[in-house]
Amino acid sequence: MSISIGSTKIPLSDIISAMKQGDNTLNAYRIIRFVRIPRTMAAVLAGCAFSVSGVILQSVLNNSLASPSVIGVNSGAGLFTVLIAAFFPTCFSLTTIAAFTGAIIAVLLVYFIAHKTGASRMGIVLSGVAVSSFIGAITDTVLTLKPDTMIARTAFLIGGFAGITMDKLTFAGLFIVAAIIIAFIISYDMNILALGDETSKSLGLKVVTYRFTFLILAAILAGSAISFAGLIGFVGLIIPHVSRLFVGYDNRILIPVSALLGSVFTLVCDLLARVLFAPFEIPVGIILSFLGGPFFIYLLIKGKRGQLYD
Image (cartoon, rainbow, N blue to C red; front, side, top):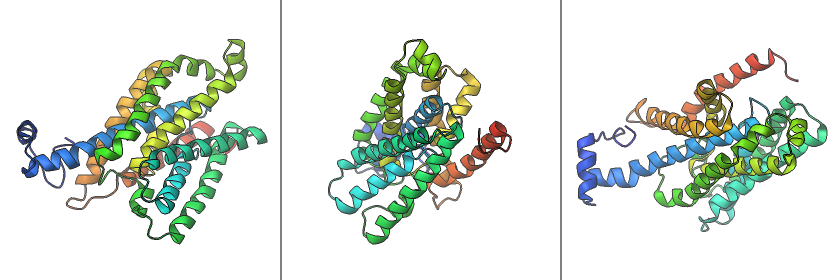
């Protein structure tokens, strides 16, 4: 459906015929090869990355409200991506590295603040909001001082998949796939870590080492996706909760299921962004915000019964 439906609808039979012929002179082939397939792959990769990143953060931080967008990962990756675009516009290959470097710095800063202040689990989320706001102010300053930055400001800050090419996906995609595989391999240790620090230590788990590893994996996943999709939010918050309704809390099952549901959910939202107001298209980040905002409020009310602190 993602490859077939858009401003120009291409029937399945035409898709198969065009791909078999591989003729660049055919309009249908050019649309499929250079527009629809890269966009579909981008939605799949971004959905997987944000969802698994959300699973990791919620489990490691033991907080159902944790997600890449809430905990500061998105804003950190966005800032470093903007810095590269503003000051090194010809170094496109550095974009992905810059994105997950910013994500790593942001999540470690949030964790450091929460750890030093002895904050509650809700305090970690509040620290993430504070760090995100500060980083967002820096990002806006750079974009204001560098108006010729080679990034479509609105599209990047909202998030979307328009104009994606396979060149943009290859480098980031390798990191996303590798990080998901590593997270799956050590998912049993994530289960132990979710039991709490004292229990984990009593079972012989090196808590500090594994927590750091998981946070880095979450930052790499979200940062890599942001490097080509922009600051898409709420996928990493919604999908882990939906996945738990089907498979429970075992991360060995939750990670692959969340990756699958995340890719499908993001694809559906991107499809809606293309067809709801056709022939006009809205960024997929708007659709996700409409869905994610109320869901976040629901989790906050359900989990805390109106209380801000643990």
